[in-house]
Length: 356
Image (tube, rainbow, N blue to C red; front, side, top):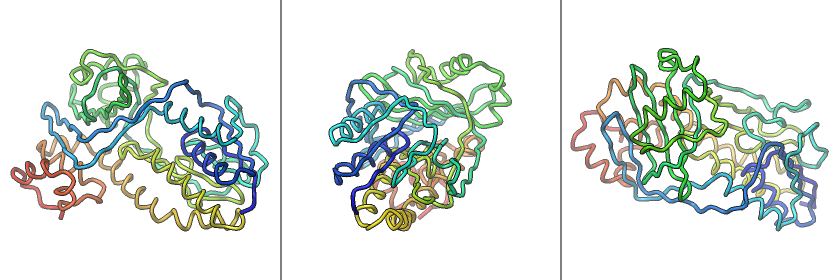
Protein backbone atom coordinates (compact mmCIF):
# COMPACT_ATOMS: atom_id res chain seq x y z
CA UNK A 1 0.00 0.00 0.00
CA UNK A 2 1.23 3.51 -0.77
CA UNK A 3 2.08 5.86 2.13
CA UNK A 4 -0.98 7.21 3.93
CA UNK A 5 -1.99 9.53 6.74
CA UNK A 6 -3.31 7.50 9.67
CA UNK A 7 -4.83 9.27 12.67
CA UNK A 8 -5.01 7.13 15.79
CA UNK A 9 -7.44 8.33 18.45
CA UNK A 10 -6.39 6.94 21.82
CA UNK A 11 -2.97 6.50 23.39
CA UNK A 12 -3.49 3.11 25.04
CA UNK A 13 -1.61 -0.08 24.14
CA UNK A 14 -3.60 -0.91 21.00
CA UNK A 15 -3.35 2.60 19.54
CA UNK A 16 0.35 3.05 20.29
CA UNK A 17 1.28 -0.42 19.08
CA UNK A 18 -0.60 -0.03 15.80
CA UNK A 19 0.98 3.41 15.26
CA UNK A 20 4.44 1.95 15.84
CA UNK A 21 3.90 -1.02 13.50
CA UNK A 22 2.58 1.16 10.69
CA UNK A 23 5.26 3.85 10.94
CA UNK A 24 8.06 1.29 11.29
CA UNK A 25 6.98 -0.57 8.16
CA UNK A 26 6.02 2.55 6.19
CA UNK A 27 8.33 5.43 7.18
CA UNK A 28 6.84 7.69 4.50
CA UNK A 29 3.39 7.43 6.07
CA UNK A 30 2.25 10.15 8.45
CA UNK A 31 1.01 8.56 11.66
CA UNK A 32 -0.48 10.70 14.44
CA UNK A 33 -1.75 9.67 17.86
CA UNK A 34 -4.18 11.91 19.72
CA UNK A 35 -4.79 11.16 23.40
CA UNK A 36 -6.71 13.41 25.79
CA UNK A 37 -6.48 11.53 29.09
CA UNK A 38 -3.29 9.44 29.35
CA UNK A 39 -0.24 10.36 31.46
CA UNK A 40 3.20 8.74 31.58
CA UNK A 41 6.03 8.24 34.04
CA UNK A 42 9.69 7.98 33.21
CA UNK A 43 10.35 4.40 34.12
CA UNK A 44 10.24 1.00 32.55
CA UNK A 45 8.89 -1.84 34.63
CA UNK A 46 9.47 -5.51 34.11
CA UNK A 47 7.00 -8.29 33.53
CA UNK A 48 6.11 -10.34 36.60
CA UNK A 49 5.73 -13.96 35.60
CA UNK A 50 3.51 -16.24 37.65
CA UNK A 51 3.11 -19.99 37.40
CA UNK A 52 0.29 -20.82 39.80
CA UNK A 53 -2.91 -19.32 41.19
CA UNK A 54 -4.60 -19.52 44.57
CA UNK A 55 -8.39 -19.68 44.80
CA UNK A 56 -9.97 -19.06 48.21
CA UNK A 57 -13.45 -20.33 48.99
CA UNK A 58 -13.92 -18.72 52.39
CA UNK A 59 -11.13 -20.10 54.57
CA UNK A 60 -10.27 -22.92 52.15
CA UNK A 61 -7.25 -22.11 49.98
CA UNK A 62 -6.85 -24.26 46.88
CA UNK A 63 -3.70 -24.06 44.77
CA UNK A 64 -4.21 -24.34 41.02
CA UNK A 65 -0.85 -25.34 39.61
CA UNK A 66 0.08 -24.66 35.99
CA UNK A 67 2.57 -26.07 33.52
CA UNK A 68 2.81 -22.66 31.84
CA UNK A 69 3.38 -19.08 32.88
CA UNK A 70 1.29 -15.95 32.92
CA UNK A 71 2.45 -12.45 33.65
CA UNK A 72 1.52 -8.89 34.48
CA UNK A 73 3.14 -5.54 33.86
CA UNK A 74 2.38 -2.03 35.04
CA UNK A 75 0.15 -0.32 32.48
CA UNK A 76 2.24 2.83 32.77
CA UNK A 77 5.40 0.83 32.11
CA UNK A 78 3.89 -0.76 29.03
CA UNK A 79 2.69 2.60 27.73
CA UNK A 80 6.08 4.17 28.39
CA UNK A 81 7.82 1.47 26.36
CA UNK A 82 5.35 1.78 23.50
CA UNK A 83 5.63 5.55 23.54
CA UNK A 84 9.42 5.23 23.26
CA UNK A 85 9.07 2.93 20.25
CA UNK A 86 6.68 5.41 18.61
CA UNK A 87 9.06 8.32 19.29
CA UNK A 88 11.96 6.42 17.74
CA UNK A 89 9.91 5.50 14.66
CA UNK A 90 8.73 9.08 14.08
CA UNK A 91 5.09 8.83 15.11
CA UNK A 92 3.53 12.22 15.97
CA UNK A 93 2.27 12.03 19.55
CA UNK A 94 -0.22 14.59 20.87
CA UNK A 95 -1.16 14.17 24.53
CA UNK A 96 -3.54 16.12 26.77
CA UNK A 97 -5.31 17.14 23.56
CA UNK A 98 -9.10 17.29 23.61
CA UNK A 99 -10.46 16.10 20.30
CA UNK A 100 -12.98 18.55 18.85
CA UNK A 101 -13.75 16.53 15.73
CA UNK A 102 -12.74 13.35 13.95
CA UNK A 103 -9.34 13.94 12.30
CA UNK A 104 -9.14 14.37 8.54
CA UNK A 105 -6.98 11.45 7.42
CA UNK A 106 -6.86 8.53 5.00
CA UNK A 107 -7.46 6.17 7.93
CA UNK A 108 -8.93 6.95 11.36
CA UNK A 109 -8.30 4.32 14.03
CA UNK A 110 -10.53 4.39 17.09
CA UNK A 111 -8.41 2.95 19.90
CA UNK A 112 -10.05 5.13 22.54
CA UNK A 113 -11.60 2.54 24.84
CA UNK A 114 -15.08 1.61 25.98
CA UNK A 115 -16.35 5.18 25.71
CA UNK A 116 -14.96 5.58 22.20
CA UNK A 117 -15.52 8.96 20.58
CA UNK A 118 -14.79 7.49 17.16
CA UNK A 119 -17.45 4.82 17.64
CA UNK A 120 -20.17 7.34 18.49
CA UNK A 121 -19.07 10.23 16.28
CA UNK A 122 -21.42 11.76 13.75
CA UNK A 123 -21.22 9.87 10.47
CA UNK A 124 -20.13 6.58 12.06
CA UNK A 125 -22.24 3.46 11.68
CA UNK A 126 -20.79 0.59 13.68
CA UNK A 127 -24.02 -0.91 15.02
CA UNK A 128 -23.25 -0.52 18.72
CA UNK A 129 -24.77 -2.93 21.24
CA UNK A 130 -24.24 -3.11 24.99
CA UNK A 131 -25.06 -5.40 27.93
CA UNK A 132 -24.86 -3.93 31.44
CA UNK A 133 -23.93 -6.48 34.09
CA UNK A 134 -25.38 -6.50 37.59
CA UNK A 135 -22.24 -7.12 39.70
CA UNK A 136 -20.42 -4.10 41.12
CA UNK A 137 -16.64 -3.74 41.04
CA UNK A 138 -13.76 -1.31 41.55
CA UNK A 139 -10.01 -1.35 40.73
CA UNK A 140 -7.45 -0.49 43.40
CA UNK A 141 -3.71 -0.64 43.77
CA UNK A 142 -1.89 -1.91 46.84
CA UNK A 143 1.61 -2.25 48.25
CA UNK A 144 0.69 -5.64 49.72
CA UNK A 145 3.13 -8.30 48.53
CA UNK A 146 1.44 -11.21 46.78
CA UNK A 147 3.46 -14.36 46.15
CA UNK A 148 1.01 -15.56 43.54
CA UNK A 149 -2.12 -14.26 41.79
CA UNK A 150 -5.28 -15.14 43.66
CA UNK A 151 -9.04 -15.13 43.58
CA UNK A 152 -10.49 -14.69 47.05
CA UNK A 153 -14.20 -15.45 47.49
CA UNK A 154 -15.55 -14.31 50.86
CA UNK A 155 -18.81 -14.07 52.78
CA UNK A 156 -19.33 -11.02 54.99
CA UNK A 157 -22.44 -10.08 56.97
CA UNK A 158 -24.64 -12.14 54.67
CA UNK A 159 -23.05 -10.74 51.51
CA UNK A 160 -20.69 -12.27 48.95
CA UNK A 161 -17.47 -10.69 47.72
CA UNK A 162 -14.55 -11.66 45.51
CA UNK A 163 -11.15 -10.03 45.14
CA UNK A 164 -8.89 -10.59 42.13
CA UNK A 165 -5.31 -9.62 42.98
CA UNK A 166 -1.82 -10.07 41.54
CA UNK A 167 1.63 -8.41 41.57
CA UNK A 168 2.72 -6.30 38.61
CA UNK A 169 5.98 -4.83 39.96
CA UNK A 170 8.41 -5.36 42.81
CA UNK A 171 6.37 -3.23 45.20
CA UNK A 172 2.87 -2.87 43.74
CA UNK A 173 -0.11 -5.07 43.00
CA UNK A 174 -3.54 -4.78 41.41
CA UNK A 175 -6.61 -5.47 43.56
CA UNK A 176 -10.05 -5.71 41.97
CA UNK A 177 -12.96 -5.96 44.42
CA UNK A 178 -16.38 -7.21 43.32
CA UNK A 179 -19.76 -8.09 44.80
CA UNK A 180 -23.08 -9.28 43.46
CA UNK A 181 -26.14 -7.04 43.19
CA UNK A 182 -27.91 -8.57 46.20
CA UNK A 183 -24.90 -7.87 48.39
CA UNK A 184 -24.67 -4.30 47.08
CA UNK A 185 -28.27 -3.70 48.17
CA UNK A 186 -28.31 -5.76 51.37
CA UNK A 187 -25.21 -4.16 52.88
CA UNK A 188 -26.07 -0.65 51.68
CA UNK A 189 -22.91 -0.15 49.61
CA UNK A 190 -24.73 2.24 47.30
CA UNK A 191 -25.24 4.69 50.17
CA UNK A 192 -21.58 4.59 51.22
CA UNK A 193 -18.91 7.07 50.19
CA UNK A 194 -15.99 5.72 48.16
CA UNK A 195 -13.72 5.89 51.21
CA UNK A 196 -16.20 3.81 53.24
CA UNK A 197 -16.36 1.14 50.56
CA UNK A 198 -12.57 1.07 50.42
CA UNK A 199 -12.33 0.57 54.19
CA UNK A 200 -14.90 -2.21 53.98
CA UNK A 201 -12.79 -4.04 51.39
CA UNK A 202 -9.73 -3.59 53.59
CA UNK A 203 -11.66 -5.21 56.44
CA UNK A 204 -13.06 -8.12 54.46
CA UNK A 205 -9.71 -8.92 52.80
CA UNK A 206 -7.44 -7.97 55.69
CA UNK A 207 -5.66 -11.34 55.65
CA UNK A 208 -4.78 -10.99 51.97
CA UNK A 209 -3.62 -7.38 52.34
CA UNK A 210 -1.37 -8.26 55.31
CA UNK A 211 -1.86 -4.92 56.98
CA UNK A 212 -1.43 -2.80 53.86
CA UNK A 213 -4.03 -0.31 52.64
CA UNK A 214 -5.74 -0.18 49.27
CA UNK A 215 -4.68 2.72 47.06
CA UNK A 216 -7.44 4.54 45.21
CA UNK A 217 -6.83 5.69 41.65
CA UNK A 218 -10.23 7.00 40.59
CA UNK A 219 -11.49 3.73 42.07
CA UNK A 220 -15.16 4.19 41.25
CA UNK A 221 -17.55 1.32 41.95
CA UNK A 222 -19.55 0.57 38.83
CA UNK A 223 -21.23 -2.08 36.70
CA UNK A 224 -19.28 -3.50 33.79
CA UNK A 225 -20.75 -2.73 30.38
CA UNK A 226 -20.03 -5.37 27.76
CA UNK A 227 -20.05 -3.20 24.64
CA UNK A 228 -19.61 -4.44 21.10
CA UNK A 229 -20.28 -3.58 17.49
CA UNK A 230 -21.96 -5.32 14.60
CA UNK A 231 -19.51 -3.78 12.14
CA UNK A 232 -15.80 -3.22 12.70
CA UNK A 233 -15.37 -0.30 10.31
CA UNK A 234 -17.42 2.53 8.90
CA UNK A 235 -16.07 4.35 5.87
CA UNK A 236 -12.41 5.01 6.64
CA UNK A 237 -12.92 4.61 10.42
CA UNK A 238 -12.00 1.38 12.18
CA UNK A 239 -12.05 0.30 15.82
CA UNK A 240 -9.53 -1.62 17.93
CA UNK A 241 -9.50 -3.09 21.43
CA UNK A 242 -12.15 -2.04 23.92
CA UNK A 243 -13.60 0.44 21.45
CA UNK A 244 -14.46 -2.53 19.27
CA UNK A 245 -15.44 -5.05 21.96
CA UNK A 246 -14.91 -4.53 25.68
CA UNK A 247 -13.16 -7.56 27.18
CA UNK A 248 -14.24 -8.46 30.71
CA UNK A 249 -11.43 -8.33 33.28
CA UNK A 250 -12.21 -11.86 34.51
CA UNK A 251 -10.40 -13.44 31.54
CA UNK A 252 -7.35 -11.27 32.13
CA UNK A 253 -6.51 -10.81 28.45
CA UNK A 254 -7.87 -7.39 27.48
CA UNK A 255 -4.53 -5.80 26.65
CA UNK A 256 -3.31 -8.86 24.76
CA UNK A 257 -6.51 -9.03 22.71
CA UNK A 258 -6.30 -5.31 21.90
CA UNK A 259 -2.69 -5.56 20.75
CA UNK A 260 -3.53 -8.59 18.63
CA UNK A 261 -6.19 -6.39 16.97
CA UNK A 262 -3.41 -3.91 16.19
CA UNK A 263 -1.25 -6.60 14.60
CA UNK A 264 -4.18 -7.88 12.52
CA UNK A 265 -5.03 -4.39 11.22
CA UNK A 266 -1.41 -3.69 10.35
CA UNK A 267 -1.11 -7.03 8.54
CA UNK A 268 -4.29 -6.27 6.59
CA UNK A 269 -2.87 -2.92 5.49
CA UNK A 270 0.39 -4.57 4.46
CA UNK A 271 -1.49 -7.10 2.33
CA UNK A 272 -3.89 -4.65 0.63
CA UNK A 273 -3.68 -2.03 -2.10
CA UNK A 274 -6.10 0.45 -0.51
CA UNK A 275 -7.70 1.27 2.83
CA UNK A 276 -11.21 -0.06 2.02
CA UNK A 277 -9.83 -3.47 1.05
CA UNK A 278 -7.60 -3.49 4.12
CA UNK A 279 -10.49 -2.83 6.50
CA UNK A 280 -12.59 -5.54 4.91
CA UNK A 281 -9.67 -7.98 5.17
CA UNK A 282 -9.05 -7.01 8.80
CA UNK A 283 -12.60 -7.82 9.85
CA UNK A 284 -12.85 -10.97 7.74
CA UNK A 285 -9.63 -12.50 9.02
CA UNK A 286 -9.64 -11.32 12.62
CA UNK A 287 -13.32 -11.73 13.51
CA UNK A 288 -13.47 -15.57 13.81
CA UNK A 289 -10.62 -15.73 16.33
CA UNK A 290 -11.87 -12.77 18.32
CA UNK A 291 -15.41 -14.10 18.43
CA UNK A 292 -14.14 -17.23 20.17
CA UNK A 293 -12.42 -15.08 22.79
CA UNK A 294 -15.52 -12.93 23.27
CA UNK A 295 -17.70 -16.02 23.65
CA UNK A 296 -15.36 -17.25 26.38
CA UNK A 297 -15.39 -13.82 28.02
CA UNK A 298 -19.19 -13.77 28.08
CA UNK A 299 -19.33 -17.23 29.65
CA UNK A 300 -16.83 -16.01 32.24
CA UNK A 301 -18.70 -12.89 33.27
CA UNK A 302 -22.00 -14.76 33.43
CA UNK A 303 -20.31 -17.21 35.82
CA UNK A 304 -19.29 -14.30 38.04
CA UNK A 305 -22.81 -12.93 37.93
CA UNK A 306 -23.89 -16.15 39.69
CA UNK A 307 -20.86 -16.67 41.95
CA UNK A 308 -22.78 -16.05 45.18
CA UNK A 309 -25.21 -18.91 44.50
CA UNK A 310 -22.31 -21.15 43.47
CA UNK A 311 -20.48 -20.41 46.73
CA UNK A 312 -23.56 -21.45 48.67
CA UNK A 313 -24.17 -24.63 46.68
CA UNK A 314 -20.70 -26.07 46.08
CA UNK A 315 -17.91 -27.52 48.16
CA UNK A 316 -14.57 -25.72 47.69
CA UNK A 317 -12.96 -28.18 45.24
CA UNK A 318 -16.13 -28.43 43.16
CA UNK A 319 -16.41 -24.65 43.16
CA UNK A 320 -12.85 -24.24 41.85
CA UNK A 321 -13.39 -26.91 39.19
CA UNK A 322 -16.56 -25.14 38.07
CA UNK A 323 -14.60 -21.89 37.90
CA UNK A 324 -11.80 -23.47 35.85
CA UNK A 325 -14.28 -24.85 33.29
CA UNK A 326 -16.58 -21.80 33.18
CA UNK A 327 -15.72 -20.66 29.63
CA UNK A 328 -16.29 -24.02 27.96
CA UNK A 329 -12.74 -24.02 26.60
CA UNK A 330 -11.24 -26.20 29.34
CA UNK A 331 -12.27 -29.86 29.60
CA UNK A 332 -10.88 -32.56 31.87
CA UNK A 333 -8.20 -33.66 29.42
CA UNK A 334 -6.84 -30.13 29.12
CA UNK A 335 -7.02 -29.65 32.89
CA UNK A 336 -4.97 -32.82 33.41
CA UNK A 337 -2.37 -31.55 30.96
CA UNK A 338 -2.10 -27.96 32.20
CA UNK A 339 -3.05 -28.28 35.89
CA UNK A 340 -2.08 -31.85 36.81
CA UNK A 341 -1.72 -31.54 40.59
CA UNK A 342 -5.07 -29.80 40.97
CA UNK A 343 -6.80 -32.41 38.83
CA UNK A 344 -5.32 -35.31 40.77
CA UNK A 345 -6.66 -33.79 43.96
CA UNK A 346 -10.01 -32.96 42.41
CA UNK A 347 -10.61 -36.36 40.80
CA UNK A 348 -9.76 -38.12 44.06
CA UNK A 349 -12.44 -36.20 45.96
CA UNK A 350 -15.18 -34.86 43.68
CA UNK A 351 -18.57 -36.38 42.95
CA UNK A 352 -19.46 -33.91 40.18
CA UNK A 353 -19.95 -35.25 36.62
CA UNK A 354 -16.95 -35.04 34.30
CA UNK A 355 -16.65 -32.33 31.63
CA UNK A 356 -14.54 -34.43 29.29
